Image 1 (tube, rainbow, N blue to C red):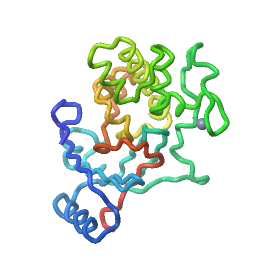
Image 2: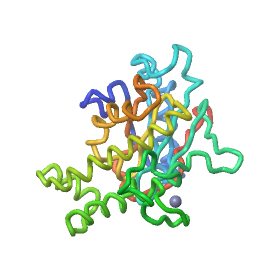
Image 3: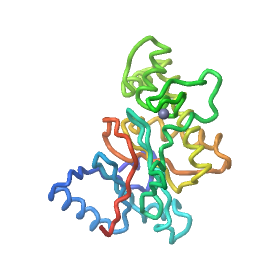
Image 4: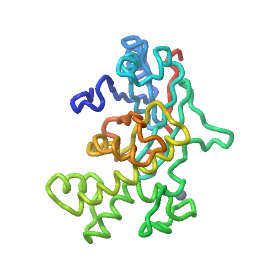
Length: 248
Ligand SMILES: [Zn+2]
């Protein structure tokens, strides 16, 4: 449960290993029997998240009382890479070219002069979102400012300990993430955005994002819930977030 900070109120979150063993499958089915109206998001690493749809209805995250089957979710991976996936009506939408959700290789939106043309990306382009929002991107920002090499986790720890440069890097990261997600909201307007991957463990993101998002989305009233998808995923998983059919 991640209800303590209020921003995630009403969501139950359970991570489980779905390695394919009979034991894990039984455990998974047990979870669904315990929460038959749950929505399960599965990422390619095998970790799953159980979202309580009843709680979402109660807290107004559905468009209307019957919208549990009409939900649109954008799942995000922030790790060594930046990926994503679109879920519509509990089904993954992979698209005609099977690249739906590959927002990490769009250019950073509302780029500032000092962000252009941006770092080179392995895909061959410059200034992809992934080059700014991956763990390596955050580490580069800190290295440029401080001359020190630190991981994303160490940067977050340094910021909490009063390191102003680390704090500055995290604020910039939050702003870039908000810009990048706002461009998704303007196109897709999902009911919820689920953050996974190692950098989704940065707890500073969740209180900061709502106000930042509103400064970039077309509607200043946009209140898209942003929530963490997984526990303890620091391995930089890339790819889409998958929705596992409850009836499977
Ligand atoms: Zn790229």
